[in-house]
Amino acid sequence: MVEVKLHDIGEGMTEGTIVSYFAREGDEVKRDQPIIELQTEKMVTELSAPVAGKISKIHIEEGQTIPVGTTILEIEAADNVNNEPENKNIEEVDNKQSTTTGPKRIKAAPFTRKVARELGVDIDAITGTGKDGRITVKDVESFSNGGTQIEEKQTSSTQEDVEFIPFKGRRKQIAAHMTKSLFTIPHVAHMEEIDMTKLLAYREDIKETYNISVAAFFIKALAMSLKKFPIFNAELDEENSQIKLKPNVNMGMAVDTKEGLIVPVINRVEDKSLRTIHSELKTLNEKARENTLQPQDVHGSTFTISNVGPIGSIGATPIINYPEVALMCFHKTKKMPVVNEADEIVIRSMMNVTLTFDHRVMDGGDAIQFTNYFKSLIENPNIMLVELSGE
Image (cartoon, rainbow, N blue to C red; front, side, top):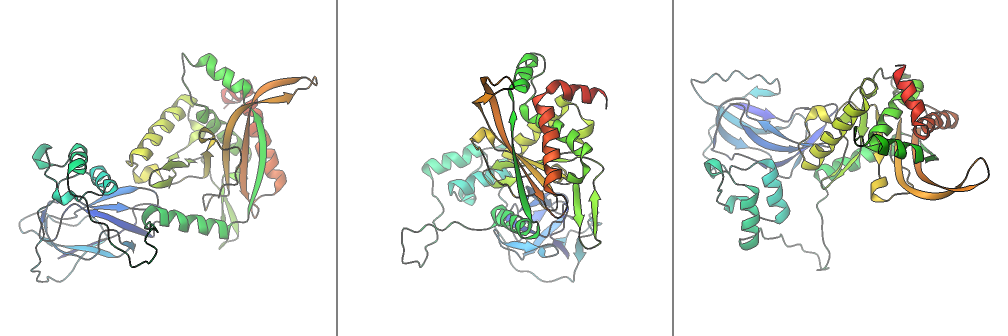
C-alpha cells in the first residue's frame, strides 16, 4: 500500500486545500495520472498518482485544508508494473483490506470543475460530450441552463436573509499571509507624485514598432533603482541578526483574480530588455487569470509591485509581501494642472506612487532617495535609456 501525502511543492508551503478528486475509492489509476486538484496560497495545481494501482482509501474530504505531511489517500499498487516510487513524500504502508468501492471516475479538467462549482452544478450528473466522454465547459453550461443544481445546505440561523461565504482556500491563506506581514513588519508608507507626460509621449512614439506596456517601464526602472539601492531588494534574517541583500531582482506583480490576490514573478529583470519584460508580464497575467500558473511562476520574488491605477486608485498603503522589505504601488494617472519652473500653469499627466517599507531595515531618508531616483527615470525616459546602454 502506498500513502500519498501532501508535500511542499513550492517555497515555504505549509498547507493546502483539497479542491476535488479526479478519481474515487475503488478506481484504477495509472502512474502519473492526475488524481487531486490542490489549492495553495498562490495557485491551483494537480497532484498525480505516484504508482499505478487502485485507490483503496481517501482520508481527506474535498474542501478540507490540511498541513504538509498529511496523508491524503492510499493506493494499492498494481502487480507486474514498474511502481518504484520516485517521490520521497510517498510511503509504503501495511496492506489493508478495503471493501469500499466508488463511482466511475469523472473525466473533467480542473478548470471545467471550477466552472461547475461556480455555477452550482453537480458534475457527477453530467454526461460528457468530449473525447472519451470527457466533460467540457460547454457541457457544464448547458446542464446549468436546464439541469439539476446542487442543493444548498440549510443553516440553523434564525436570520434567514444572512448569507454565509466559506472562509477557506486561497482567501484564508491570503489572510494568514497578510496578517503575518502586518504584525511582523513595522510598515511605513512614503508617497510621491510622478509626471508621466514624457514617458507616455515616448511610448506613443515607439508604439508602432515596439508596443511596450507602461508597467514594463515601471519594472525596468525599479530594477535599475534596486541595483542602485540594494537595501530595498533584501530580506531581514532576525534569527541570525543580519540583512540578506539579494543578488538578483525577481519582480513580483500582485494580480487580482476571481480566486483572490496572486503574485507571479519575473526573474532577473535586471538582465532583461523592455520587450522581454513586456512579453513575460503579459504571459504571466494571462496565466494568473486563467488559473494556469505553475509553481515556478509564483516563487522567489525579492520585490513586489501593485499596479492598481487601471481600476482607479489614487492612494493606498499596501501590505508588504513578507519576507520582502518593500513594495511599490502605482496609482491612477490623470491630467492635472501643474505649476512649472516658469511659474506657468500647464496640464501634465500625473501619477501617485506609494512605497511601503520595513522601518527595521531602512529609514525614511532611504525611502525618499530610492523613490526620487525611480521618479527621475520615469520622468526622463532618455536618462533611463542612457543608463540602460551603459549596463
